[in-house]
View 1 (cartoon, rainbow, N blue to C red):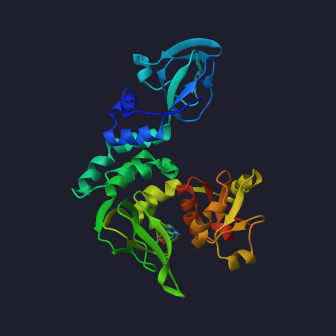
View 2 (view 1 turned 180 degrees about the horizontal axis):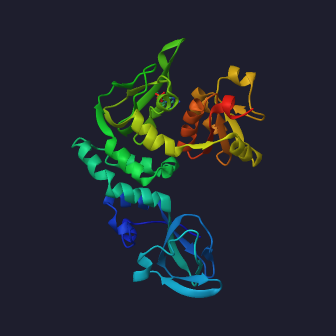
View 3 (view 1 turned 135 degrees about the vertical axis):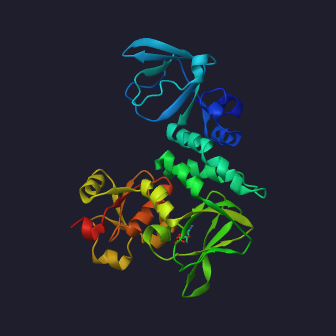
Length: 348
Ligand SMILES: Nc1ncnc2c1ncn2[C@@H]1O[C@@H]2COP(=O)(O)O[C@H]2[C@H]1O
């Protein structure tokens, strides 16, 4: 199979992509490629449940029920404007008759893009005002993160409608270490610096630089703790912010996969791993057999030591710190579960 970059013009020839706004179409074109099948090659099989929306660009695709061809889809015709057999699990098998070019889009991504296109972007572009230079790129970035795919479209609409834009000048402090958590933020214009003050370094050590589309301020909200770092604007810029209650209800809860002890142990038995986010002293006192320990504060720094193909069950004493850890992991595409009630209640 070869892959080729797509033009928005081609995407517009498919339904319902033809209804997407220009920016969103361009963002989608950057994500999707033209692929190829050789004659007789199978695209998907009856019963497959992988959620991908497929369009035929050229060539002829045969749809088979059992072994009999019941329909064909030929690139460039009216019937090829629509997704091929868009039901899951698939009701037919799709096989190339000749050389077929097609595109395949993650159906969840498409769903959130269509929802956003029809709901949030209008209000948000109004809020942006005339000094906006970043456009809606931040939204595309946010919507494309794997974590966002878990959020029901109705929540996405509500999130975008409830967000408030705030503008800052270079040097302004957006949030301060030690303060109570009140908002969750998405950086929509400019750059920020994340620093942490330590007893030995009052000026703060630099933890990270944030760019458009990056999010911050979630940890204090999820774990009901104080802000663990200070975020300062490095340039003039803007953020969109969402209040704590809205963040928890609309964004955080749907992203978390809570499991009880029995379900957690099943995941571990099938190759998963306990990831304990308490402090080393708490961990040494008692922990799950085979668990690894990465205190919540270090999870971002040590994330590259984790295996993206492994499933992790995060645990702490109550479920608070572990849910903050699971949020960070799932934002980065990891499959992370949270032990409900924590190890003090949940197991042993
Ligand atoms: N190492 C880091 N890299 C990027 N962002 C961080 C890092 N540490 C903390 N933050 C962010 O800084 C925020 C400070 O407020 P919170 O504790 O609510 O949430 C924190 C995170 O969103």
